[in-house]
Image 1 (cartoon, helix red, strand yellow):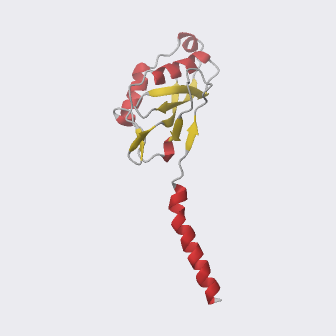
Image 2 (cartoon, one colour):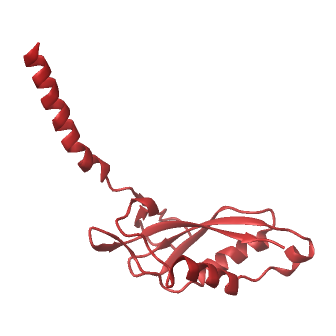
Length: 148
């Protein structure tokens, strides 16, 4: 019995030693090469799984200021009292450029969805995300609210 217990403990410790290796699996997806403006596959890390996350110049406070200064409420949506939150995804490239802006969850008025995409597309270069000290492409998700 003691031999069985000792072997079980050795297997358990060996498995625990391998856990950090499996926890660092690259969470990489590829962007569809058939998407408009896309030439080929891009390896993209998810925001939560990079060592250093991409950062807007000025941090979170700078990002909110940029959105509030750049966002313009579309006239028809304003006139019809349409409001809501548009959730967009985009990729911060290894060079810090924002690309592949998409609406994940929009509102019924397309003008608000287009405005959210315009604001994100107008962003300056970010500080790139890093994995193992190397700059990588990272997918980010950002909600933009339209409130009256």
